[in-house]
Image 1 (cartoon, rainbow, N blue to C red):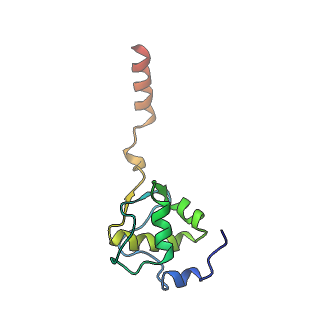
Image 2 (cartoon, helix red, strand yellow):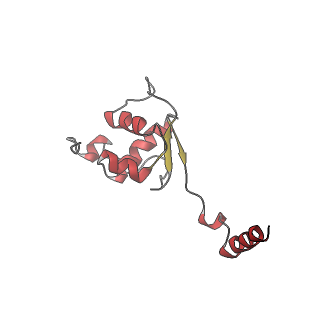
Image 3 (tube, rainbow, N blue to C red):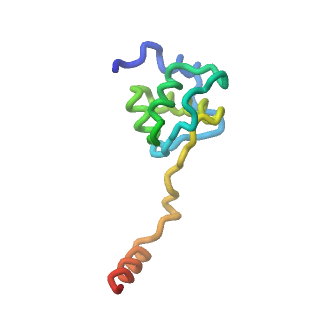
Length: 113
């Protein structure tokens, strides 16, 4: 696939960020609809995101597969999120993960079984 013919900033009408949401590069996005019908003025890039997201995909992978800058993809995702066309699963909070000591204790407990 060749790169876009339209300049990326033109695709998103000069917007540099989505309204009210920041998409982490490793956040997974999944489409919850096949089409948007008349919910918004859908561009070909919006359609492409819905097709790619028929299975959960990280934001960074979407940008790579679409040959678009991540900032542009984030704006397009924001459009889709505003009309409830996608669902986003943020990465786990690193502070909520168990520490190394806890993992060692669990491993020792399992070995004792």
